[in-house]
Image (tube, rainbow, N blue to C red; front, side, top):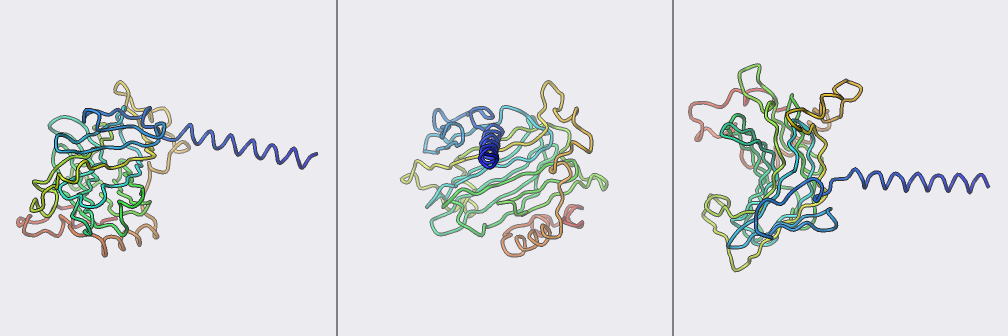
Length: 290
């Protein structure tokens, strides 16, 4: 009897854990709103997934309902397959206004058989020009992969399937502005940018292949929501309540993985573009990338 009771209790605990995870998981109905596209954006799978579509008339997009000041933002994406030239699929954080802050993942489509370009950038007070670009080590159209932005007062980390591809550190001590005072929303979109997206605009969108569709799934936001000017983290700011993303930095394994990604898969680095910056590179380029 004791054995049967223990088994029953174990099964009950497992079921309760599953329900708790389901309740805490992100949901597009609860966490986001489709903001443009006239029906081209559709929430699916009971809120677990969302599809964005682009045709010759319009693209589509959505945003988070809340603004956040720091956090970890995870999104699974499956990108437009086949000839995706001219299309751009995005997942980014941004504030509003002329002097806005922004943290970008943009996925630049290409002709069939050629890799997507993963474009990353950081804007502070309306100024960007801090691009790094990568080709992925897998086909991002064949299955869902997880793309993550970790943003805390010390650094911004871009991750793909939990592998760091870029770290942008806070260098305010040498006069480099860092985004830390403006709350940002999550934004995602699929749109046509064939004037620049693919091979500098030389390859245009083939509209005979439209509509184009990108899929989002399992949004997960663990951050400090800002409501009526007050951060939700103010009341849980002690070291005992700190979440991993609040002090996130790379360990030895993470640094090795970052070196591997950047040595093998980086295709553009603003810190190495002397033609674009003949006056010299930004001061943070001289500092450790970790």
